[in-house]
Image (cartoon, rainbow, N blue to C red; front, side, top):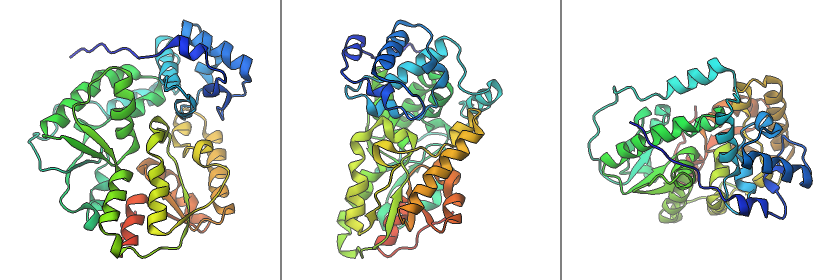
Length: 343
């Protein structure tokens, strides 16, 4: 099945930008305004640029762009066009094969709404229990796998090829609204797919919005937790920063304090797990150390995650410094007196 989807990108709007924050604010480049303007002009015109070789795929430039003009997607497009491989070829091949549609997926039948997608994380199934998740139907597997991870490997063509089939599979479930547990799924449906003109015929709902609304239903059961927490923003939160307010909304509702620290909010560091996959193990270790030590320095008691990959990457480092790693869904259960599931 062949689909041709092109990235919506306005070069004139980009080049008229008064700040070029997409590159100037990058935590992995050291570019001033003039250099950033020069390099983005090269990228737009299809020339080679050091940016294409130095990008660590943290997605942050998507958030830094004040015009919603998708600079990161453009960088990835150029990487693939020029066959600039962000990671060693065998690693890219292995990752692409991992999510390949094999035709061996379960028969898809309509399910009862509301529906939650766990993407490609069957280990999350035990979490979907308790009052906050009563009555939800679960879909999970490579046949609904968002494939956004291939942005890290400079392979947008894989995403564009597979996503229409993924969306078609979700529609077969009879889904009108889809709760997305993982930020990457939500980012696909709210940012990446629209950027390429791929129609999404259902309404995506982020897990945090869903949890906030459910907590409001059970507000009388909430007992303030009085914890000090650090929140670990994963890379794909950068694709849809408009929903980030739900983090603070939830924390306020359940009585936890989000500690003030250096590597948070717009200045957040990703878990750096993928940076190791890209072939930078020393940088990955350094970033993880800086991030986790920053949480500890801010006196956090708990570290709250949404992304399962971030959790599994940083949980042990968090524990070693005396903090407790927990997924947002499980923190919310704790607030209404339920026992959380801890990996």
